[in-house]
Image 1 (cartoon, rainbow, N blue to C red):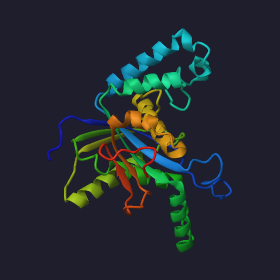
Image 2: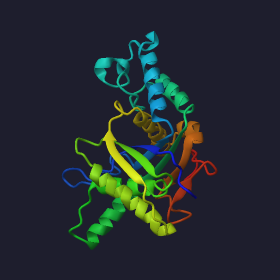
Image 3: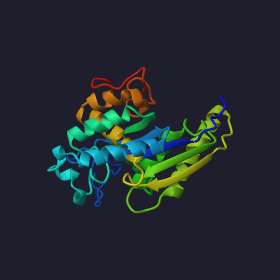
Image 4: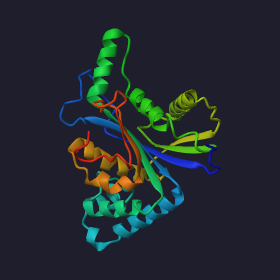
Length: 269
Protein backbone atom coordinates (compact mmCIF):
# COMPACT_ATOMS: atom_id res chain seq x y z
CA UNK A 1 0.00 0.00 0.00
CA UNK A 2 1.39 3.39 -0.97
CA UNK A 3 1.98 5.92 1.79
CA UNK A 4 -0.37 8.85 2.08
CA UNK A 5 0.89 12.27 1.07
CA UNK A 6 -0.44 14.09 4.10
CA UNK A 7 1.61 14.18 7.32
CA UNK A 8 0.36 12.39 10.40
CA UNK A 9 0.32 13.92 13.87
CA UNK A 10 0.71 11.84 17.03
CA UNK A 11 0.52 12.95 20.66
CA UNK A 12 1.98 10.61 23.29
CA UNK A 13 1.33 10.45 27.03
CA UNK A 14 1.46 7.89 29.83
CA UNK A 15 -0.68 6.69 32.73
CA UNK A 16 0.66 5.02 35.81
CA UNK A 17 4.35 5.02 36.63
CA UNK A 18 7.17 2.89 35.15
CA UNK A 19 9.07 2.99 38.46
CA UNK A 20 9.45 -0.44 40.09
CA UNK A 21 11.75 0.33 43.06
CA UNK A 22 12.04 3.15 45.57
CA UNK A 23 15.30 4.95 46.38
CA UNK A 24 16.31 2.16 48.78
CA UNK A 25 15.64 -0.61 46.29
CA UNK A 26 12.36 -1.73 47.83
CA UNK A 27 9.79 -3.20 45.44
CA UNK A 28 6.88 -0.84 44.75
CA UNK A 29 4.29 -2.88 42.77
CA UNK A 30 1.72 -4.26 45.18
CA UNK A 31 2.23 -1.49 47.73
CA UNK A 32 -0.50 1.03 48.51
CA UNK A 33 -0.29 4.11 46.33
CA UNK A 34 1.58 2.37 43.52
CA UNK A 35 -0.24 1.84 40.24
CA UNK A 36 -0.60 -1.78 39.19
CA UNK A 37 -0.36 -0.97 35.49
CA UNK A 38 1.75 1.24 33.29
CA UNK A 39 0.35 2.29 29.95
CA UNK A 40 1.58 4.39 27.07
CA UNK A 41 -0.91 5.89 24.67
CA UNK A 42 -0.81 7.83 21.43
CA UNK A 43 -3.58 9.92 19.97
CA UNK A 44 -3.52 10.38 16.21
CA UNK A 45 -5.08 13.75 15.40
CA UNK A 46 -6.13 14.64 11.87
CA UNK A 47 -6.22 18.40 12.57
CA UNK A 48 -4.28 19.36 15.73
CA UNK A 49 -5.05 23.06 15.34
CA UNK A 50 -8.79 22.47 15.13
CA UNK A 51 -8.72 20.22 18.19
CA UNK A 52 -6.64 22.72 20.15
CA UNK A 53 -8.98 25.55 19.19
CA UNK A 54 -12.01 23.57 20.35
CA UNK A 55 -10.40 22.62 23.67
CA UNK A 56 -9.30 26.20 24.34
CA UNK A 57 -12.77 27.53 23.54
CA UNK A 58 -14.44 24.97 25.78
CA UNK A 59 -12.12 25.71 28.67
CA UNK A 60 -12.72 29.46 28.36
CA UNK A 61 -16.45 28.84 28.32
CA UNK A 62 -16.38 26.62 31.41
CA UNK A 63 -14.05 28.86 33.39
CA UNK A 64 -16.40 31.82 32.83
CA UNK A 65 -19.48 29.78 33.75
CA UNK A 66 -20.88 30.90 37.16
CA UNK A 67 -21.69 27.26 37.92
CA UNK A 68 -17.97 26.55 38.34
CA UNK A 69 -17.08 29.78 40.16
CA UNK A 70 -16.31 28.12 43.48
CA UNK A 71 -14.64 24.98 42.09
CA UNK A 72 -10.99 24.99 43.28
CA UNK A 73 -9.57 23.40 40.12
CA UNK A 74 -11.15 26.15 38.02
CA UNK A 75 -9.28 28.94 39.80
CA UNK A 76 -6.44 30.40 37.67
CA UNK A 77 -3.97 30.50 40.58
CA UNK A 78 -4.37 26.73 41.04
CA UNK A 79 -2.96 26.17 37.53
CA UNK A 80 -5.20 23.17 36.92
CA UNK A 81 -8.33 23.18 34.72
CA UNK A 82 -8.03 26.93 34.17
CA UNK A 83 -4.66 26.27 32.52
CA UNK A 84 -5.30 22.94 30.79
CA UNK A 85 -7.73 20.05 30.97
CA UNK A 86 -6.42 17.14 33.04
CA UNK A 87 -8.88 14.33 33.65
CA UNK A 88 -7.56 13.52 37.14
CA UNK A 89 -8.09 17.11 38.30
CA UNK A 90 -11.24 18.02 36.37
CA UNK A 91 -14.63 17.72 38.06
CA UNK A 92 -17.13 15.24 36.54
CA UNK A 93 -19.19 17.95 34.82
CA UNK A 94 -16.07 19.20 33.05
CA UNK A 95 -15.00 15.70 32.08
CA UNK A 96 -18.36 15.04 30.49
CA UNK A 97 -18.01 18.14 28.31
CA UNK A 98 -14.50 17.15 27.23
CA UNK A 99 -15.62 13.62 26.37
CA UNK A 100 -18.43 15.05 24.25
CA UNK A 101 -15.96 17.33 22.44
CA UNK A 102 -13.53 14.46 21.72
CA UNK A 103 -16.26 12.46 20.02
CA UNK A 104 -16.73 15.30 17.53
CA UNK A 105 -13.11 15.28 16.29
CA UNK A 106 -11.22 13.03 13.89
CA UNK A 107 -8.92 11.25 16.34
CA UNK A 108 -7.81 7.65 16.91
CA UNK A 109 -6.29 6.31 20.11
CA UNK A 110 -3.76 3.49 20.46
CA UNK A 111 -2.16 2.17 23.64
CA UNK A 112 0.07 -0.51 25.11
CA UNK A 113 -0.68 -1.77 28.64
CA UNK A 114 1.80 -3.53 30.93
CA UNK A 115 1.13 -5.26 34.23
CA UNK A 116 3.93 -3.95 36.47
CA UNK A 117 4.02 -7.18 38.46
CA UNK A 118 4.87 -9.07 35.28
CA UNK A 119 7.51 -6.47 34.42
CA UNK A 120 8.93 -6.83 37.92
CA UNK A 121 9.10 -10.61 37.57
CA UNK A 122 11.10 -10.17 34.35
CA UNK A 123 13.48 -7.68 35.98
CA UNK A 124 14.11 -9.89 39.02
CA UNK A 125 14.74 -12.89 36.77
CA UNK A 126 17.17 -10.88 34.69
CA UNK A 127 18.93 -9.70 37.84
CA UNK A 128 19.45 -13.33 38.87
CA UNK A 129 21.00 -14.09 35.49
CA UNK A 130 23.01 -10.88 35.20
CA UNK A 131 24.08 -9.22 38.47
CA UNK A 132 25.26 -6.12 36.57
CA UNK A 133 21.79 -5.38 35.18
CA UNK A 134 20.00 -2.38 36.65
CA UNK A 135 16.44 -1.49 35.71
CA UNK A 136 15.77 2.06 34.51
CA UNK A 137 12.15 3.31 34.18
CA UNK A 138 13.07 4.87 30.83
CA UNK A 139 13.81 1.35 29.59
CA UNK A 140 10.15 0.34 29.95
CA UNK A 141 8.93 3.63 28.51
CA UNK A 142 11.14 3.44 25.43
CA UNK A 143 10.28 -0.21 24.83
CA UNK A 144 6.60 0.68 24.78
CA UNK A 145 7.28 3.55 22.37
CA UNK A 146 8.75 1.03 19.94
CA UNK A 147 5.79 -1.32 20.40
CA UNK A 148 3.27 1.48 20.03
CA UNK A 149 4.69 2.86 16.80
CA UNK A 150 5.82 -0.32 15.05
CA UNK A 151 2.87 -0.23 12.63
CA UNK A 152 2.38 3.54 12.50
CA UNK A 153 5.46 5.01 10.84
CA UNK A 154 5.18 3.73 7.27
CA UNK A 155 1.79 5.26 6.50
CA UNK A 156 3.04 8.65 5.35
CA UNK A 157 6.37 10.21 4.31
CA UNK A 158 6.16 12.73 7.16
CA UNK A 159 5.34 11.94 10.80
CA UNK A 160 5.15 14.40 13.69
CA UNK A 161 5.37 12.87 17.17
CA UNK A 162 4.82 15.06 20.23
CA UNK A 163 5.67 13.48 23.59
CA UNK A 164 4.37 14.84 26.87
CA UNK A 165 7.30 16.08 28.92
CA UNK A 166 8.53 13.79 31.70
CA UNK A 167 10.48 15.78 34.23
CA UNK A 168 13.02 18.36 33.13
CA UNK A 169 15.31 16.22 30.99
CA UNK A 170 15.23 16.40 27.21
CA UNK A 171 14.92 12.83 25.97
CA UNK A 172 14.28 13.67 22.33
CA UNK A 173 17.34 11.71 21.16
CA UNK A 174 16.33 8.57 23.10
CA UNK A 175 12.76 8.83 21.86
CA UNK A 176 13.97 9.23 18.29
CA UNK A 177 16.01 6.03 18.70
CA UNK A 178 12.95 4.20 20.03
CA UNK A 179 10.95 5.31 17.00
CA UNK A 180 13.76 4.28 14.69
CA UNK A 181 13.76 0.86 16.34
CA UNK A 182 10.02 0.60 15.70
CA UNK A 183 10.48 1.40 12.02
CA UNK A 184 13.35 -1.07 11.61
CA UNK A 185 11.28 -3.84 13.18
CA UNK A 186 8.40 -3.14 10.81
CA UNK A 187 10.73 -3.07 7.80
CA UNK A 188 12.40 -6.34 8.85
CA UNK A 189 9.05 -8.07 9.32
CA UNK A 190 7.60 -6.94 6.00
CA UNK A 191 10.86 -6.61 4.01
CA UNK A 192 10.34 -2.94 3.36
CA UNK A 193 12.50 0.15 3.42
CA UNK A 194 10.58 2.95 5.07
CA UNK A 195 12.36 6.26 4.65
CA UNK A 196 9.86 8.87 5.79
CA UNK A 197 10.84 11.83 7.95
CA UNK A 198 10.06 11.53 11.68
CA UNK A 199 9.96 14.79 13.61
CA UNK A 200 10.14 14.37 17.38
CA UNK A 201 9.57 16.93 20.10
CA UNK A 202 8.56 17.18 23.73
CA UNK A 203 5.92 19.56 25.00
CA UNK A 204 3.43 20.25 27.78
CA UNK A 205 -0.38 19.87 27.70
CA UNK A 206 -0.81 23.59 28.33
CA UNK A 207 1.26 24.39 25.23
CA UNK A 208 0.02 21.54 22.98
CA UNK A 209 -3.67 21.05 23.70
CA UNK A 210 -3.95 17.67 21.89
CA UNK A 211 -1.88 16.24 24.74
CA UNK A 212 -4.85 17.07 26.97
CA UNK A 213 -7.00 14.89 24.75
CA UNK A 214 -4.47 12.05 24.94
CA UNK A 215 -4.55 12.37 28.73
CA UNK A 216 -8.33 11.90 28.70
CA UNK A 217 -8.13 8.68 26.72
CA UNK A 218 -5.42 7.34 29.02
CA UNK A 219 -7.40 8.30 32.12
CA UNK A 220 -10.40 6.41 30.79
CA UNK A 221 -8.25 3.36 30.03
CA UNK A 222 -6.55 3.53 33.42
CA UNK A 223 -9.90 3.63 35.23
CA UNK A 224 -10.82 0.40 33.47
CA UNK A 225 -7.62 -1.37 34.52
CA UNK A 226 -7.04 0.07 37.98
CA UNK A 227 -10.65 0.31 39.17
CA UNK A 228 -12.68 -1.90 36.86
CA UNK A 229 -14.73 1.10 35.68
CA UNK A 230 -15.36 0.59 31.99
CA UNK A 231 -17.97 3.24 31.18
CA UNK A 232 -15.42 5.91 30.29
CA UNK A 233 -13.40 3.86 27.82
CA UNK A 234 -16.61 2.37 26.43
CA UNK A 235 -17.84 5.90 25.74
CA UNK A 236 -14.65 6.66 23.80
CA UNK A 237 -14.40 3.27 22.11
CA UNK A 238 -15.52 4.51 18.65
CA UNK A 239 -12.31 6.58 18.69
CA UNK A 240 -10.07 3.68 19.76
CA UNK A 241 -7.89 1.89 17.21
CA UNK A 242 -6.00 -0.81 19.14
CA UNK A 243 -5.22 -1.48 22.80
CA UNK A 244 -2.43 -4.05 23.22
CA UNK A 245 -2.59 -5.70 26.64
CA UNK A 246 0.84 -7.34 26.57
CA UNK A 247 0.51 -9.36 29.77
CA UNK A 248 -2.94 -10.85 29.22
CA UNK A 249 -1.38 -14.05 27.94
CA UNK A 250 -4.08 -16.58 28.83
CA UNK A 251 -4.96 -17.20 25.18
CA UNK A 252 -1.74 -16.19 23.40
CA UNK A 253 1.86 -15.45 24.46
CA UNK A 254 1.80 -12.00 22.83
CA UNK A 255 -1.19 -10.85 24.88
CA UNK A 256 -4.50 -9.48 23.63
CA UNK A 257 -5.24 -6.85 21.00
CA UNK A 258 -8.50 -5.06 21.77
CA UNK A 259 -10.08 -3.47 18.70
CA UNK A 260 -13.47 -2.21 17.56
CA UNK A 261 -14.39 -5.81 16.79
CA UNK A 262 -13.03 -7.01 20.13
CA UNK A 263 -13.86 -4.26 22.59
CA UNK A 264 -12.42 -3.90 26.05
CA UNK A 265 -15.20 -4.13 28.63
CA UNK A 266 -15.46 -4.51 32.37
CA UNK A 267 -15.50 -8.29 32.23
CA UNK A 268 -12.93 -8.89 29.47
CA UNK A 269 -9.36 -9.90 30.21
